[in-house]
Length: 110
Image (cartoon, rainbow, N blue to C red; front, top):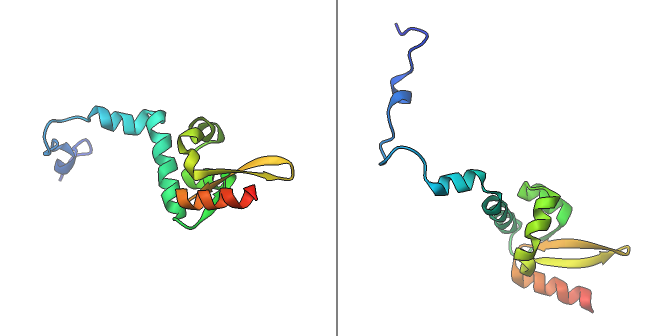
């Protein structure tokens, strides 16, 4: 019978996929917000689907990022973002495809 301090064998086994430890890319994916946030935005755009759009407030929830983070990276995705006026205020709409964003822009420019 194992004692309380015994670690199961499967936990103690070293990595078998090569050198132990993690790479720089692993670190970046876990801690570099300039890498993580754009990845989350891209994933949220894909999740919308080519024929769908969402106001930015809901898009934030889908992407799992903050308003400040989205504001910092919005310009990198300008082809997927449409600015619209609602009751005198500018609101942003995120489109699931660049083609849909172009159609939506054409609708509000008329």
